[in-house]
Length: 133
Image (cartoon, rainbow, N blue to C red; front, side):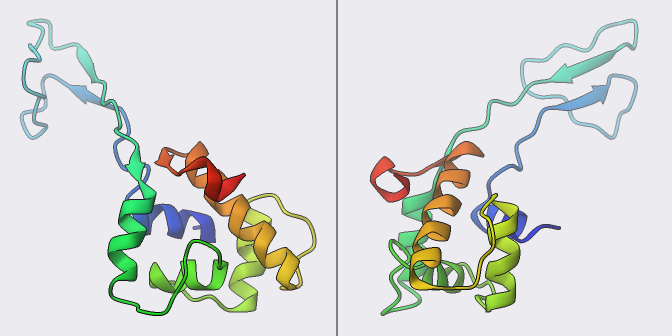
């Protein structure tokens, strides 16, 4: 699992995927309002994923971590999510979000922070534009 996927998981992003269900499988619950074809042919349940309010989730989590500023610090963002913010993990995260060589400088940390928030927005997170632009 990539380090970025750990962030997605911690925020609950990406768990409402469309799934294929077989009508003849009684262990698979059909969504309300779905009719099962008499033929026993597979049906597809389409789930429209509601964007996750990243700011609200992070604000709620940060209440448990006073003094951390997830809005500007990649290290604090990772700590609020309960993830290891070590240099090695930030290097992996930088690679995951498409940044070049990462050594952990202040400028690179700022760029990583914005890149992570931008990627969250691309992956179904509702992130205010001022945080990732």
